Image (cartoon, rainbow, N blue to C red; front, side, top):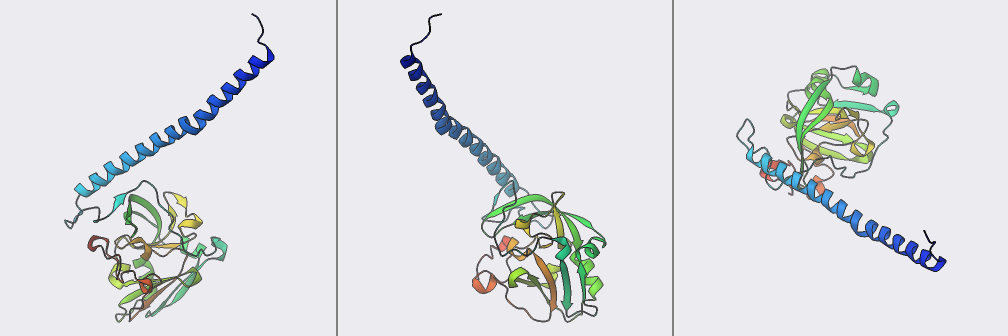
Length: 241
């Protein structure tokens, strides 16, 4: 076969480079668009299916104004130390037996698995999420919560707080958790421990949890004093006060 002259060969190489560049700019982008479209279709289907489902109490499984997504979004905040060796949780306030436990002591308590839906005030919901931790009722029983206690204030890193009625704090699905989907909590999700209050908007599930205070009076938390609703029931769309 006759060899190409250097000028022609150089031109062919330039054309090949241009074709590769076009693929990277357009072909790869199309692949991403197709993948993104597939995820959008899947999430839309999951949203529609969840809207058709009912909870045991007759409410729609998906609260109004929510859409289903397939991963847990990190929603910001001021992180605390993720190191278990530095962690302590204080349970105090209107209790007979206040206590403080480190991470190892918390792991020594009875652990349970939580399978719950969580709902963010920004409009996304994550269905059938799996968490591992300690029931809030276990911690309340250990502390001996007094009958006059009406509220719980979650205390977290950098002064963050979230308030809720004691009935929500002691809900059967409420807990303090350290694993998500079988893995240790990532720092962006509140490592090493966070609260889990799935029946309220997810800002109430304080990340980087440091304290649980049982109280006789309500004290608005970080987001509540900035205009968010004091209670935060997703089915009543209590997003803002």
